[in-house]
Structures are given as C-alpha cells and as structure tokens.
Image (tube, rainbow, N blue to C red; front, top):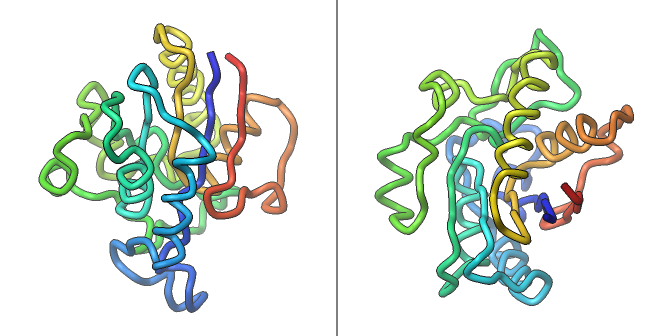
Amino acid sequence: MELIFIRHGQGEHTLDLPASLQLMDPGLTKDGVSQAKSLQTQFTLAESDIVIVSPIRRTLQTAYIWSNDINCKKIVSPLVSPRMFPQNPKWKTLPCDRILNKKVIKGAYPTFTIDEGLPEELWSSGINTMPEQEFNVLAESFLEWCRSQSVERIYVVSHDGTITSYRQFISGKRLTRKDFPKETGWFKQLC
C-alpha cells in the first residue's frame, strides 16, 4: 500500500507574512486553486483510493478540487491537522491553524466523512502543540489504521509541519524546516 502525503495549495495565510498568519480560516488563493487542479494530472484518483484530509479550509478545498467527480472515500481527521515543526512548548496555535467545527465541515463538504472515532479533544486542539511522545503514539496508531485498509493508495492532504512530523516519525531521521514540502508538494511512503 502506498501512503502519499500532499501539502495543500497556496493559502491566503502565506501572502503577507507574518501578519497573514493571524487570519482566521484562510482559504486557497487563486494560485492555490490552480495548484489543487494540477493535482488531477499529477495523481489520478481512483474510486478505490482513500483521501484523508485535515479539518482546515485550505486542505479541504485542495482535496475537494482535486477529487472533483471522483467517488472515492474522503475522510476528515484531526490526526493530520496542522502541527508545529519543530515543536516549542512556548508556542501557541495560530489563528490560521484552528480546526473547523465539524458542523461547518459537514455543511460545506457533505461528501466528506468526519472521523467520529476520535476523542473530542483532538477535534478542539488537534496535534499542533502536542508533545512529540504523544504525537508518536497517535502517529503509530494512524499508520496502523492505514495499513489495515484494503486499498492500494491512501492520500493525506495536510500541512508542511504535519507532513514533516510524519516523515520524521516514519524514517527515524531528524528533519528540519528545510525538509518542508512546497505547496502541493508530496512525499510517498510504502507501508
């Protein structure tokens, strides 16, 4: 089984750094929409694929545009929500990285399934500031769930820090911010 992590398209929160990080619920820019559309030719989705999406508007938009007209399973999960990288206990979640309410997600993306099997605290705080040991436990559980699925491919539409955190966990190698994927950049792992 292939596990493919894809970073969302360009978000509005990246246009005027650092001030734009204070935006609440930023969506994709015009370039971000184009990047999401380009995923359709880069990665041809099949109905048998699973797409796991972070509960943030820019990732939901990326997955929605990319998977347009493909009836594959789309699951929204806080296990792939924004994650600071590297971790710093003094840092707080930025407004641009706050998880959307499940009701808002269901209303805007009715074809997506909400991962209801997780503790409610993950839906409120996510994995953003979670200590590395706690993240590692959840990461292992998430990867085990992925391995248990009878599919050829699982795609994860997420964020640079989250993808790098999973890459570091999977590889066992120390990574840095220099290892961040660019907008709609990706990382493939065989599981």
